[in-house]
Amino acid sequence: MRSIHFSKFNPNESSKTPFEKLFDIFTQLLTYTSGDVNEAIQWLTELDKEYKLTDNEYGIGDFIEDLKSKGYIDENH
Image (cartoon, rainbow, N blue to C red; front, side, top):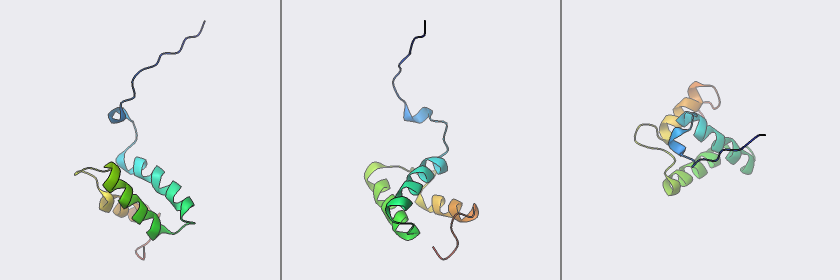
């Protein structure tokens, strides 16, 4: 017989990197903004202010630099 074990969710135990967490949100925002990168970043910044998505070690600026270095956006955005 199979059983299901439930445990309390601890977001600190997530295996995703800070970039991956923000990238998931960013890609959803791109859908809502019809692909407007600048608007999606503005929304992400507002969400970060309200919900503290980033910390002192990895912020929105770091995320934008990672997007550029990974080729997701270019210098014009």
